Image 1 (spheres, rainbow, N blue to C red):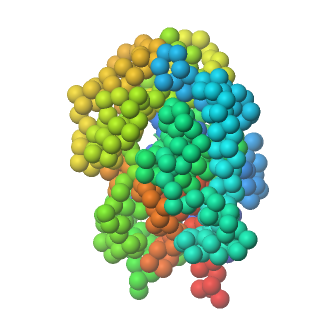
Image 2: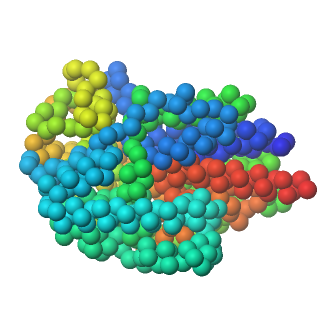
Image 3: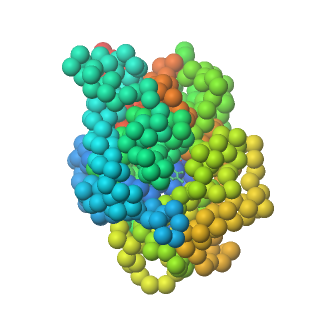
Length: 498
Ligand SMILES: Cc1cc2nc3c(=O)[nH]c(=O)nc-3n(C[C@H](O)[C@H](O)[C@H](O)COP(=O)(O)OP(=O)(O)OC[C@H]3O[C@@H](n4cnc5c(N)ncnc54)[C@H](O)[C@@H]3O)c2cc1C
């Protein structure tokens, strides 16, 4: 198909849209404000080393296999993936620890040891239901263009309706978890999956149980870090004729007769196109960051509920006193308090800390000896457009995180010049429009997922892709949104052609 498309943003959604469009013969230009691809799937330089500074958990490999295969390529020839036998280690104090495994029976055994046989049975029941939720929503929601509650039921058909109701779409995740687990630690562990979408486990719908199934289907470690995936995708787009203009800020989407017809850059240069894919946070539209004319391209959310942001420390250091794995979570002793504080715009005194030990394999073995590359993350409110996060405030938060780690036995020896902090204010600067929210709007309440904008908006010729749009955040979902945007764009161009 002939035609010119501009993709604004080289996050994973933009990269996938660009690839699919190139493969269908469109002339594609990707405009990216940063100096390389990946967006939130970013790399951070600390000392003389580079670290992943965004996503670290790679799941839903099959989505990427399909994307690469459709472009005539083989994913495993472009990125090297190692399946993780241990999904993650979880700690509550120096004694209470729990590993979850790729093999659910091993996880059940570990849960039995930590919390007793009833909880192990609860885990198996939970896993079976999480699988059911995933299967019920896979084709009706995740791969569907822009579902609403009615279309979801129609797609499921009469036979699928009991299955839909069985997944308890109106229940809250936390309440539902109480049905499987009496041990608060396990409620906390499985409730944390809500934060993968930037939501509070206490407000997220029970359907987010499906994240447990996504992890059970496999977690992979990407050799060289997650950013390698972005580099591989960008190289593939270029091999298909796509062009990247890095360090290029798109300032305004241009309209002709109400239809998107080009982009004005911050430099004043104007580029024409038959269609445009926007890979920014959709909230950037409402804020007029891409021009006043397209402010109302998507309905305004009222009251807007931003998803979580984060405070991330990427550092080179020497951990001791705790057997870190590649992924380790140190839980707050007051989980409800943590999320209440976040809702009030505060970071709690006792935050949950996620540590990614990037040089360790799934079993915790180091690839080399000496100081290692580490990444510590705590949840933070998405107030990066109102709060500058000064050095004192960041140090206070670092101290809270450090205390949580030390109570679990972990100390990290490092020096100030080997630590780089990314705050909600930094995320807001890098990914403008939503105060540093990392996952679009919060998935709170059963209707929230349906409120995410789809690929099409009110402006003909303008399409949305990314974690803030349907089907939602996370690397695989944002990739899916890129496919949905490309599909919609191609269908519309073909129908105009006819
Ligand atoms: C700290 C952190 C941890 C995470 N952990 C995980 C995880 O473990 N697993 C997982 O699956 N997901 C995780 N995520 C979420 C995941 O990274 C995102 O959902 C996904 O990468 C978002 O991709 P996107 O397509 O929305 O694009 P984004 O990554 O949001 O990229 C958008 C791009 O658009 C560019 N842009 C914006 N405005 C303009 C403009 N005007 N002109 C030009 N360019 C512009 C930006 O520079 C950016 O490169 C994490 C995210 C973060 C930040």
